[in-house]
Image (tube, rainbow, N blue to C red; front, side, top):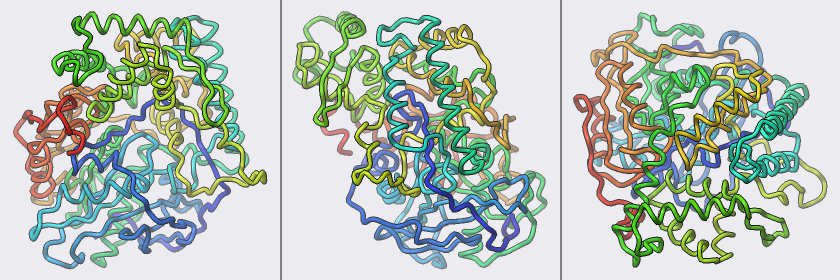
Length: 613
């Protein structure tokens, strides 16, 4: 009943510590979650957890779980590094972490395993799942009727999965590159908010240096970056569900490493239940389009336009609603009044926002400098303020309160407020982390998640080739983005700028079509068991509802739930019993709403104690 042939323990790459650096727009693409159920799924409160040595687990071609992190089970699963040449001895080793169901897997109420991806690309599922798995389990479980196992994993190149993508030989080199990159400011205006070809040329050269560093580490440790791509991860997920089925049900068949499982004439294959946030929706879309006969249930929340992700200049449709959220911030502020929102200054939302942007422009001309507690000199520019505002529109439920209070204080000359916003908006690792405490230069453990790493191999490898584009082309690209959004338009283009000299080609690049056959609940070979369920906020800063509608059009019968909230992803942006009920019902029965439906929220960012939900 499994879709790939088990293979013996082949040599795998247990390599030296490897690191990758991704330039980020200051906010990742990953969806966080809101409510007592969903806040913890993707952006959970941090709890103390015991240390666990992933190196103590021997990699295996079969799924072998070990106790870890109190209530979890962990495994390191070997898969072919190159799915096009699976007999090659090189192996990737996937870090997998599960929160077992509340009942044994042979119990009548065991409802199966749900895989999850937190987004990015580049976020560690094993790290986020430590606090996110339990509330996700609570969302989908129904006491006395159904209980799920929740499985998080680190995709290729990410977190505790090996080999890791690596572009720097030391933390100090990484911190230095990031510091110089941040110092350029948004749209390469060197903090002055302007575009010029000289600064763009310098940015391109800086990214060329990044590419050279990637090539150097590839030569030192062996090629890995070419195999870090979404198509390979989708195939890895087929292997994961096959190995789960083998472990729990004892099924073991010999169909080999068939990459074209769309036409597999079998009904008895394991099928995927999946919850993907942000970039995770692209991973889910790839999976449904490449392996539709392996789909059971897919919930995709905060939907990226997969066509825009994989083809053309890339990432050009994300910011169409960003500034609408910022407008609603000011409108909500004044509606709440000065006792709740400190920026409600007695004028009106339009005038107050105009004053804010004038103040930001003053930071472009006269940035704020300070020395932090570690003795490091910091500079807070207008572009840093834009990035801080961008963080707020990502997560209004959590961030609107800080935004209004700190901005109001800073505009009145409070240096402490400026320091807090600078620390929150920084995208560079602390420089002091680049120096080993012992002075020995000992490398960091290769199993230590690196939250700034992992993005470029996916973004550059999955997308169209943009190497060789000159400064003029990139100037036009940046200008188009800034025209879409005053808040994030200066930083979003960096997601693709890192690809301007990317040194490797992905060994497996899927470009669509992003579509699947009509679902059939009778277990018909080659087609999904259920349609896909797409979730979206009414206004999302980087994955607009228009993208959810475009992607749903490619999957017959797909359902769309538009939650009346603002922020990144529906389950993140506000608590909604309506959305939760539809998601839980779908995971159980496969039933999607007909067409597009709206869900109201239980409370919003200006309601007292809403974030505590």
